[in-house]
Length: 160
Length: 473
Image (cartoon, rainbow over all chains, first blue to last red; front, side, top):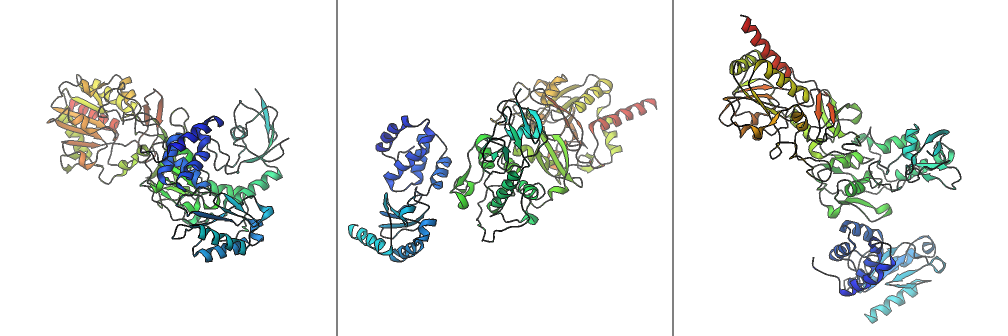
């Protein structure tokens, strides 16, 4: 099979292997590592991970589609994940979502045409004490309001 | 042996037995969806809640192993409430389209809802709906009815040996489907419909043809190969509607292959020969027996018997030869490439055997030699077959001879025969067959045959009578 994942992936996996009781337990870290390389998980990457773990590609797809943090379609440079669970919702997450949709001109689950932003809904981020919360790529942005979100988007637009 | 108590009944348990198995032995029924005795335990559906003393919460009976001194209650208030709650959740998205669902009448969801659920529903939100993928010629999918028990996924992985069903996404958005929406590849797809506890996966062959509660059931054995899988013929008004596997842990466990499941179709084929034929012409039985006698009387004849006949039929032919056709030879034929049981073996890793006839071992046990030992055939050859034995194996050995056929034939198969005496198919007769491992099993009559076909024994008896009568005159 043609290799799509870099040596970096295999080096990282080699390092992780002793920490887990069996190879199957490596599915989640392997998917994270693969996602780091592409920004999302194309079919080829899933198949290669399956081959590395030694399970059927279908099982990898089941796992990858179960967790919302694995992207099964390409995402923009800045992936905004707004929590819309109870605590955040009570503190105005719906408003934030509406604002973001309008501001970026896309619907939840879509990406902007310039490839700069993606917007998605997230289940509880575990940041209820500082609700409403959002994840931008790997960073938490908490105690959000419309102004703060607007500022963030503008900043990222300038940075490109 | 350790003992535990279920609903006040003390019962012995074997180590490693789960509470469902133990309860069943104690005569206590525990409702289940995801648990299946032939598959691994996942405890997903939460329907088999039981209360175990000294355990703080309700336990799932499928994943709780019985142990010494365990006191289990299956009818206590928390259990009843727990099951009702589970039922309510399971029915949140179920369309309740039982009147147009093929599973109705044999549906676990229906039964358990009736037994443990509430007659009222508090849920008034819109139900989720799916666009279904085409799952191939055997199975029809209806994801709206699914309760995500994952029995199908586990069946593919653990029994059929092919991982083709997957659960995509999670929670309310879950979709149980095939990989990339491909049609099913396994040759055991019919089992998906059997194990599905709802009408989510139904058999295309059976869809909309009959209501489950109208069917009469006859326990018999499949004649598809030398495995001898136990099956049930489900029929009504003398018409077979489907065949389903019957549990036999020694032979087929809970499963059967599609070839065996749909094998019965040829017995109801509109082109099946149901009246005696002389060449192209249809003749009466009187003439047919006369013809048989004229062609065979006093001669040495080559008898070719299919290894799909029952022990009783084969023995009758042998006796007939000894009494009326002295010096005739008898050979069995069945599957191309499998002339004797030493050639037989597993055709796949699951159930299928190489020999496509059911009674190869039985024919050998009666001392009948394979057709591969036949040197030269006589001018007249009698071919007797049940319906499954491969005619080509017999015909290529006896080309250019005068052929008499007895048994089950389709129109297209009789062009080279000078005389055809139609017989009984495996669904229409009783008898014994011996499978590849030497296990003797009985096949049972499910269908009353047409009055224009006769059993092998009857045909031979009539022929013998005719000879005796003419000898007196």
